[in-house]
View 1 (cartoon, rainbow, N blue to C red):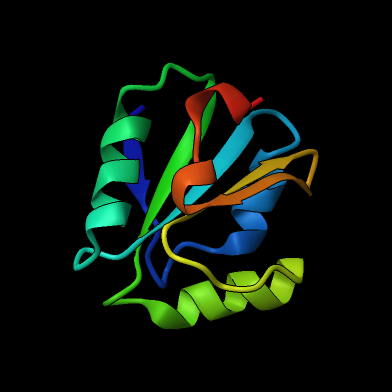
View 2: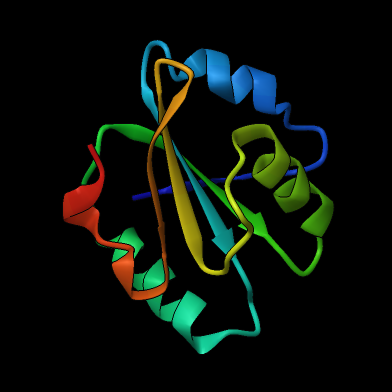
Length: 103
């Protein structure tokens, strides 16, 4: 799995719209957390047909807050949120993050 950087100029509305055509995976990553680093290593080995976005929580926590509010999902780290057809189809954190669960 290759990741695109989720940055302040990246609009969640655009990612949501893209989810109509292709699965979108959002990965909230804390660069100071070993569990998050292990989850990232696991995800990098995945082979999924999706656009995968990584969010650096230490630099852009406000984006995580926007995601939590937009999808009514409490913030966790590490965390993946999978969108299809503009809806959340998977929300997983910590050890629950598993390539096989990504549709």
